Length: 167
Image 1 (cartoon, rainbow, N blue to C red):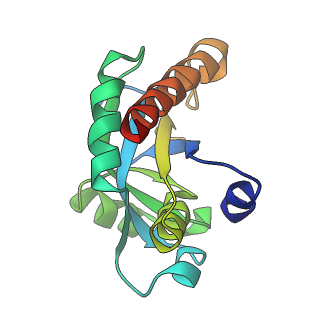
Image 2: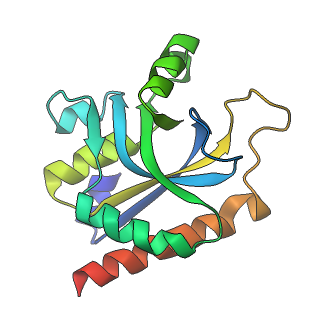
């Protein structure tokens, strides 16, 4: 989909994905600006040679970190684990991810960052940490209006950051 979006004229891709908490930074919901994503899926390997992580462009990360300081929900910068199969989320795999400092699990950041690096396209990914992987009652709470307002606040901050880099 990212390839199609850029072919159709997209200039900057912002991804916000719902994700499960691995290493707690706060009580959900909150956001993680994904600076690196552990590659445990197939798509990223179509773009990049083997390497444990796919990464966000550092100058873009720095600018977005700065603008996200003013959003309505906390935004933490950190790593996620990208997997395309929930059955891989075993206790051992979760503990391994936790030991590597990974904050959340999601399904797309590694592929998007691998695409971005290979095609030299600006892409940023946020994990909207909305649950503790079904481990507590009433999990999957996204916040007011199902988290839409908070997500739009984060998207706006990322767009402002990117636009300021383009000037």
